[in-house]
Length: 231
Image (cartoon, rainbow, N blue to C red):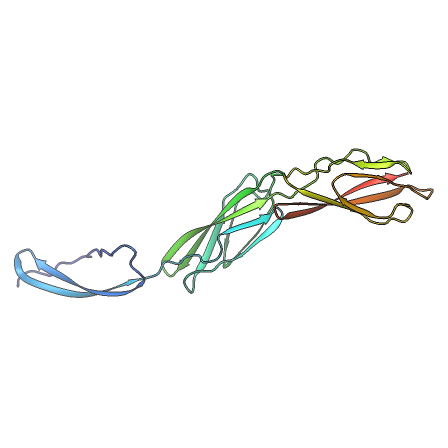
């Protein structure tokens, strides 16, 4: 046999969706100048697994809460890197990047009536193989009162009226409570919806009366205080 053996790489053609593992095979080389001359070479191909994020990928939180996700992978010894693009409806909207198996970030929405959707790209890497998954987070707005009466001072014996408390968030449930106050004859009271009650000041000084409102919507809760002065 005259001539040198060919040099260079022989590209490997692997079946689609080949499971991870170690595979062996044989390459048969035919020399163009001598078709009856054949040389066989054994080879081994190692197919490494692609890591996949296995934790939950869809979350819902309330504005101002912390997203706290423990990242897990289908493979051992996986490292993680995550990124969030800037979003105009998030007050820390410069975007963020982090490393490690815990994704933590406080998300505060600037929207008052509707949710905002945030996406994180999580890249997991095992050895030389990597994969990117997407985590989707819905940030619901904090429900707040939107029609607080301008009336802030009443005289003793007059009624304080707050008709149909409402919120920027559709479907919000609003309850209120007023605790016992020294100097106010009427006992504490609570309810849902409108307030219309007489307040009697039995002292010679002004008394500040506080109503505590709880507003709930889409799994989010907020507390607001409305104060009035009873002369």
